[in-house]
Image (cartoon, rainbow, N blue to C red; front, side, top):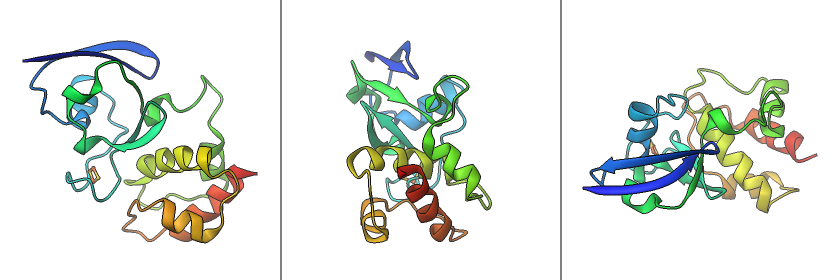
Length: 150
Ligand code: FES
């Protein structure tokens, strides 16, 4: 039995249970935050991307035991109240989403990426974000990231 305390979207939270359980399970099943998606479950697709202490992380591959004292942000907590994050605004303006399934993870990855790369080229985006999109919306994703960077 593992007990950890942390914050999710700014609110204090705790977990007691199997420390090997992935964060993604906790978010979706315990916390009811269904915006974070399950894709591959092995850390490869990025559909489950959240921020842990401001850095992009694949929540299917982060065990609950590793989260004590951390601050987790999910897509539900990315906006500042009613004010959308610049990446969310850009996503809407560029009409990025197709089927939409990977988009929360894409947005979370892009928001973390832009903090370290405020003026990225297409190559920077391609090498810095490897989230998968089965619809192939990469062209619009790049455009939205560049718009958000302005
Ligand atoms: Fe976590 Fe694919 S579901 S990386």
